Image 1 (cartoon, rainbow, N blue to C red):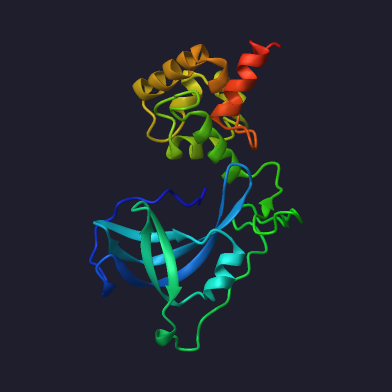
Image 2 (cartoon, rainbow, N blue to C red):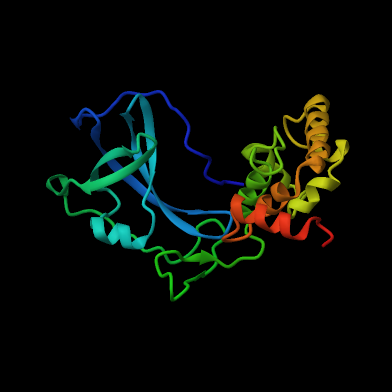
Length: 239
């Protein structure tokens, strides 16, 4: 399954910088990233460039409105910075470097599941993938469910989630509690010891407080605070 992996620290030469903390680099492509809620976010695939001691090769573009505001096209050179010293951000297009051979971008469909998007008329800048079986969404849901603030299932990372979905071992988060040693060791690079550790952590997650489970389900507009309020009000999963 050819899904985009999270940004990693990469080694490589830096490109010419206009300013020490705001280098310029080329936008090689614009892809669509699908989040766990189905939200589609355009991402600029950049020529690798050093920024704040890290080699950056991608930057979120937030939504189509931001692309239009920047006047950005595939092939453009752009000025970037790290917003809050963390997230790479495209500041502006370097129009002086344009050659007239740039391609425009239109976020019309999800690249990963190839289905038409749904646009909420009240929130136009956040189109969503409407595929019920979208693999990209499911990976996001599994990673969120297993995160430290949710069910804390250490060892369940991108690579494992990707394989479990591709092999159809897991179709939703509930399937994590039906995993077996046999099903996990059937995956690539999953030895018996590693598989056993995953099963132990899945079992341990059952003791987490109710609010962690509610938060881990990834319900839209239900963050940690709301999950806590719901858990206190209802008292148990059964209620």
